[in-house]
Length: 277
Image (cartoon, rainbow, N blue to C red; front, top):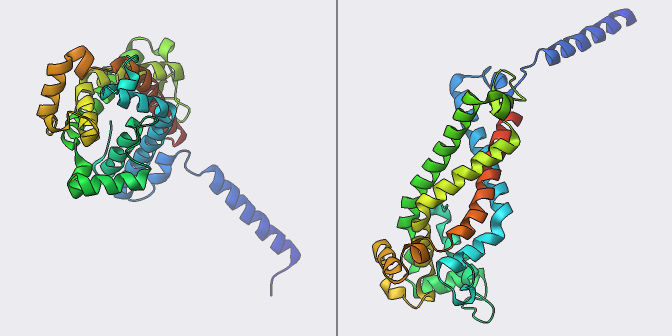
């Protein structure tokens, strides 16, 4: 029924040879593997992989500089406990960012909120319900476009110019595709940091405005900062440009430069890891 022993041995050997041949002939990278499917499936899958890489890069960057973000909030709102010290919210998570800012602004002995749940309840009850969680949304939206656009444009430009004029000095073959040049890791960090610094400089007044509007009733000048333009006008009129609209920028460089450096570098490395070059 099962054939002779030599036949079974030959069958097993043939099966192993087939598996080995399939393994050696398997697609060498993610792009080749995906291309064996329908083109639409390939495009959609590649898009989601790139989104995943961006999320991973963002998480690494945010974790690196999280402690500095709290100090920046205190500076932007002119918290009197920090006079001696010199974006990115998506609409669906904006209430969480609002509560985070309120809690970050609190200092020892001046706790308006006892915790996250209490902050949510207090804002909802005293600041107009759900609309209270979206104070400062307009400057957030207006600031996101120049920040993201300038940072990616600057990084892309630096990368392109560097690889074009000094490929040997600044570049190396990609680990997943030797025919493609990528920046060396330390050059990636440098270009990402420069891109982040330039983008932050351009969009920073929107960030200051957003933070002040988010703090709302916590600040004594609350009634003079109800809209984005009123807030900008108040900050500029009372504190000027350097000590108002750009207050805390030097500290923000310390935060955003390593953040963007880590983000762009992680993104480039993950592209190689997933064979997307």
